[in-house]
Amino acid sequence: MLDVRRLQVLRAVVTSGSVTAAAANLGRTPSAISQQIATLEKEAGLPLLERVGRGVRPTAAGRLLTEHAAVLGRQLAETETALADLRAGRTGNLSLRFFASAGAALVPPALAKLRAEHPGVRVDLKLVDARDPLPEVVDGRADLAISVHSHPAPPRGVEFVPLLDDPYRAVLPRGHRLAGKRVIDLAELAEEQWIDAECSPGPCRRIVLDACASAGFTPDFAVDGADFATTQGFVAAGLGVALIPRMGLGAVHPGVVVRRIAKPEPVRGIYAAVREASRDQPAMVSLIEALRGA
Image 1 (spheres, rainbow, N blue to C red):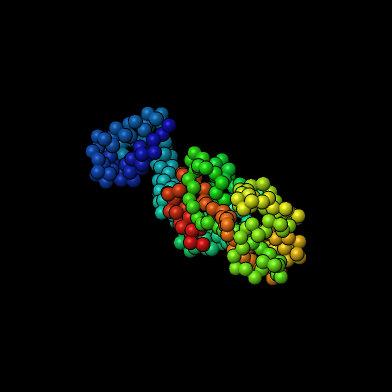
Image 2 (cartoon, rainbow, N blue to C red):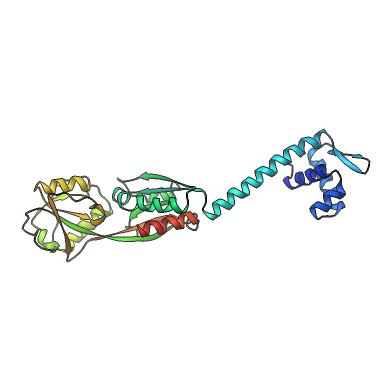
C-alpha cells in the first residue's frame, strides 16, 4: 500500500525539480528525501524519477503518482477543515427523539436557539410517543432522547441529564364542586369518575396511579382520553376529571378549569438521555443547555 506522506514527498521533489530543493523546502536532509523516494519506488514497483542534469524529472509512473498526490493533498486539507468544524460545533448531525408534550413545549425553542448558535448543525427529529424513547439512544439510533425519568440507573454508555420537574394538575369541568378551590387534595377526587389521559402503560400512567394509591384510592377510569387535548374535551363535557402534567396544558380548553394538587402532588421528572460518546460535542452541549432553558 502506498504511503500518503511519501506521495507528498514525491510531489515536493517533482514540483521543485530536485531532491536538494525539496529537502530545503521540507526542512529535511537530501538523504532522508532520497530514502523516502526509494521506499516509495519499492511500494510502486516502478521507477518514479530520472536524472536530468543536476535535477530530476518524473517518469510516467512518477507523474501519475504526483497527480494523485495533489488530489489527496486537497482531500486531506478538506478533511482536516471538516474535522475542525465538527470539533468546534460549526457542523455535524444530531438525532433527537421526544414525546409529544415535550415536542410542543421544549423542542421548538431549544432548536431555534441551537440553530442561532450552530447554523451548520443538522438535527434529525422523531416523535416517539407510544413507547419509551430511551432504547433509541441505547441502540445507537439517536444521540439524545427526552423521556420521563423511570429508570433507576442509566444503561451503559448513556448519561441522564435532568431537565425539569413537571407537576400534574387537576383538570375539572367548569362548575365542578371543587372548581372554586385554588389547591385540591388528591383524595377529594376519589369518588369522581376519571378520564384516563395516559391510557397506555408507562411511567406517566404509573405516576398517576402511585399518587392516587398514596392518597388511599384507585381512580375509576370511565373513558380513555388517548391524549391530553382529547382528555380535556371529555372533561369539558362533564364525563369526568383528569390529571394532566403542566407541560401538557399548553392550550387549555375553555370548558375546563385547572387546579394545583396536594397530598401528594404527582410530579414527573423530565430528563435527557444522552449517548456518552456525543455528550461533549459543542453542539450537544448547546442543545442540552437550550432544552434546560426552554
